Length: 226
Image (tube, rainbow, N blue to C red; front, side, top):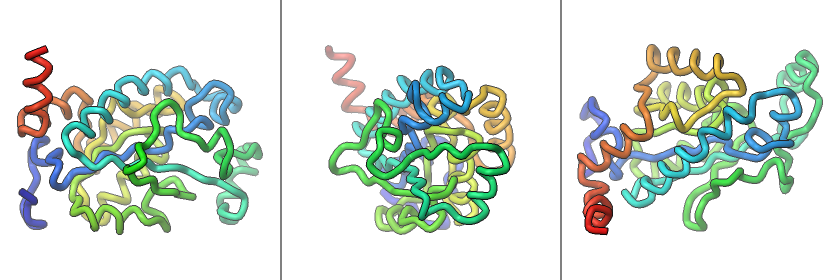
C-alpha cells in the first residue's frame, strides 16, 4: 500500500517498498567503467569501478523480482550540451578528450543494460535531476524513496542524491553498488552522504529488507525449495 506523503519512512524496510521505491543506476557506461574508456585513459582506477558491477547486477535482478522500478541514468556529453562553465572546467583541469558522445561505444551501458520496458533518463550534468525528465518520471510512478547506485560515488551519484534530497525524496546509498575513480573519493563520499543526506547500506541489507517486507517472499521460497 502506498504510504501517504506525510508519513515518515524511518526504516529500510519502509524505504525499499516496491510501491514507492526506485533503484537508480547512474552512469554505468563504458567511458566510466570499461578498460579503454575515458576514465581509464585519464588515469582513474577502473578496476575498482568494475568490482562493483557483480553486486550491482545482483541487486538489479532482485529489484526486478521484487517489482521495484529500475531507472537507468545515461550521461550524454555532446559538445552542444556543454555549458561555458563546463568547458572552462575541462580546460582548467586539462581534460579535453570527449566522452559519452551520442551513439558512441563510450556512451553505451557497461555490462548491465536496461530491459526494453525500463526507463532511461538522459542527463547532461552530474545530477540526473538537472534539466531532465527524472522528477516527472518518478512522480508519475508515485516514487518517494530512491536507492542510489552507479558511478562515480563522489560526483554523479552524490549530486543526484543531493538534488533528490533537496526536493524531498528519501535517499539511500548502496555502498557496494557504487564506486569512485579513487577509493579515497568513494569512502569520503559515503561518510559525507550518511552525515548529510541519507542512509548508507549494503546491497545485502536492501535484499534482506525486501525479503522481510515480503517483496521477495515468493522468490525466497522458490530458492529454498530448489
